[in-house]
Each structure stands twice: as structure tokens, then as C-alpha cells.
Amino acid sequence: MKELENNFVKFWFENGILFSKFQKDTVLNLDRIKQAIEMREKISGKQKQYWLYDITNIKTVPKEVRDYAERHGQDYLYCIAALVNSHTTKFIFNSYLKLNKPDFPVLFFTDKEKATEWIMEIKAKNEINSIEE
Image (cartoon, rainbow, N blue to C red; front, side, top):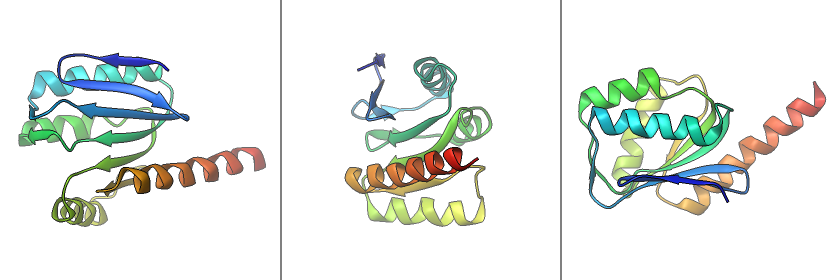
């Protein structure tokens, strides 16, 4: 299993899915989000990935960090399942996505198993579509 980590985030692969998890009580700033994006691109080999993004340990994300991630952090992705730790957070983010649709599927979950199942469904559909082409 290929892994990459620093003092605040870890990336690894399981069953063809890229996983990442932030360390406990991570405060994201511009430098950290830039590092995380670089790490994700490095571990993925700049190839498109299905990503389960566990953000349950993030303490704060300032607006400048969110804006930077939205502009620079969406390359090489088929989809993102983001894992959050409350149903309220999940509802807020998923409602936001209905108004601001990204170029690829993104959905927020509170259950890792359900997030993984959703990614596997998208992955299977993409594989079927690529065979048919």
C-alpha cells in the first residue's frame, strides 16, 4: 500500500480509492492546504483518482483556504466523498453543492462505509462506460 504523510495529513490507497485523513484538531491555513494539494497530486502521480477525504479532525478552515482549495485543489479527480462528523455539517455542505455544482461528483457523508460504497458505484459506472466506448 502506497502512503504519504506529514505532521497533519496522511494519504494512502485502498482498493483503488485514494484516502486521506487529517490529524486530530488540525487548523488549516494556506501553507497547509498547499502542502496537502501537492501531496495528493504526488501520491496520485497526477492521475485521476476516486477520493475519500476525511475532514472529521479539521478544527477550522478560513475562507482564504476554502477559496484556494476550490481554485487549485480539484485537478486529477473523478469524485470526492468527504467524511464529516455531524449530520448538520453534511446537510449544509450537500445543500451548498446543489447551488454550486462542481465539475465532478462530490458528496458529504457521516458514515465511511456509505461514502466508500458511493465511490465504488461511481467507479463501477465509469469502468463500464470506458469499456463501452
